[in-house]
Length: 308
Image (cartoon, helix red, strand yellow):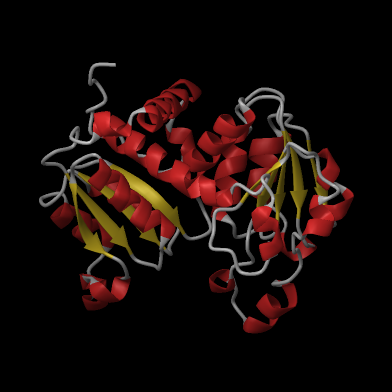
């Protein structure tokens, strides 16, 4: 039984096989509409989510399975004091696979230790978000044609942004990747990412504060929002929330084939005028998220052996 807690739980070979299966699903989705008949997905979401939770649910429904779960801690026995270990022991009797989001870093790992079914981390605090990363790399591979030899800019909240942490950790394993980390000083990438993923592995990167000075060098721009829920006080959030806004003036400085990704939700870090630019692919990215989660569910439930 396999769990997906961080992107590093998948080797590059395994990750590529997930992406290849997602490609097959995209090409002929109806072919996969009954591969999970009789299977159940439990979605345990202890903090709010729209895209991730509904994407998991859509993925399982598209495969012919069914879904149960809760969308906030207030609607679960967590309000009575039940811990994650006990919850997953119970859920293991109801479902075949589980996706869990939790505000505490490490909670999905605890769940995996006590679970009888595969556990997928759907986001834990400011730590990791592996299925968003699978979505991101599927989007990049589909639209750029490769995952090697890219200059990738990540902009905004790089301190608390779990999507940025997971993406850096994953892309750093591909050849000839260069990172440009664009953030205010207070929201720079954590030391453990800089030291263990970038410096120790000799991955070229630079840290800058102004997006317009570097956007012309990028093949991929990954925008993130400044997350109010990760701040300890409102004053710091208000001071930093508008640090970076991508508008058409900045887009005009970028390459004609650069693509702009965003894990969403967007607040105001991307002006709505950018939505009409063909390089803005963040809404396409959402659809790729359904396909890759379909592939992930199939792989973890070992139902990926249908005739090709």
